[in-house]
Image (cartoon, rainbow, N blue to C red):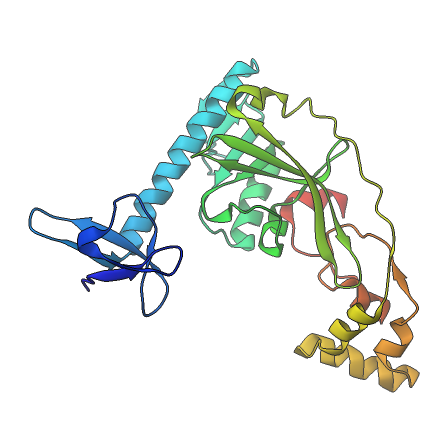
Length: 286
């Protein structure tokens, strides 16, 4: 559907005839991103379709892969693009020295598919490093990133993100869960294309995290937790102990946790199992 007006990033109504190319615009009705189309006779907006997304995704992926290829070559490694591994029936974005697979993941990936691919490499005795880009790019680590979590003695639990447009590689390191609600904490360093070869030489200082004590603000947040899992845990805890979760936790403190558990710290403290998240790259550690 053609539209002749849309909103800019500030929410200002912009008419297609005065709109500028290479700017972001959004639908007035659904707030989804729209594209400015310029023909010989007219200008108009239309919703971005799957074809647009696929083309953009492929471009981002190719550019990022080229950046990584150049970086690994500069480090002195033997690099092969998309070398087919018949035993695994997989084709990593980059194969390093015939023993390390590099994947630049831009599109959303189901954790079960991720698990199959990681296992395929491991069955060949190979390690894999997953670098996030495209739809996964973000200024901080969120729960959707945790399935890609890896571990290194120097970096602790870590994630890598590459923005192919800015040619910046971000290392999120020493990722932890903090506080009763298992908020994600991380440190980070950003490397430019020119110093990306430092990625394996990076020895970051660690920040000592203290235990977080419950306070009125946190207790208020806890009282407002009414999702099904929280309700079940609160009810079961009260039936077993004849005291509310809020009263039990009022004077408790929470040490930082490894970012590998499904349940929040307060839920575990009140009897929830320490079930692991599905994190294929960490299976060897659990």
